[in-house]
Image 1 (cartoon, rainbow, N blue to C red):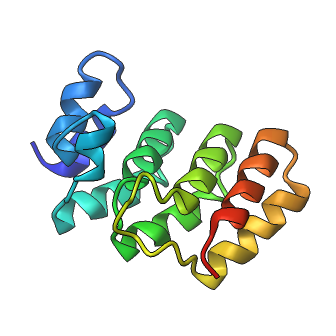
Image 2 (cartoon, rainbow, N blue to C red):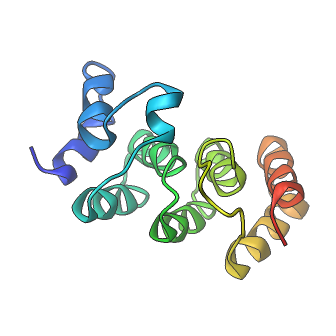
Length: 141
């Protein structure tokens, strides 16, 4: 099954763990920290950040969180504008979590830092504000 089809299946609870394994090779924290994906899978996960279904967007952010590929950062920055607070909060976390991406250098692109500052100051959701603030404090400058 192609990665785009698998990404759409993230919306369905039955079989989700198998879908995640097929996309990134595992589901445990240890397995996810070692995840490496090919270009079509990364592209499908990045496109999933714009899916109409918020469950797909959330899971794509969750999986992109474990990839230290700079292309994943671009999709995560895009997710900071998501209309659903839990997706925005997850994107904030993903942009600053060195534990999820041990080989990542922790440097945030300027676009991410600026957007995180806006969210920390003015997002209507307190959990998003708090996560944006935590990410800014953890970021390498």
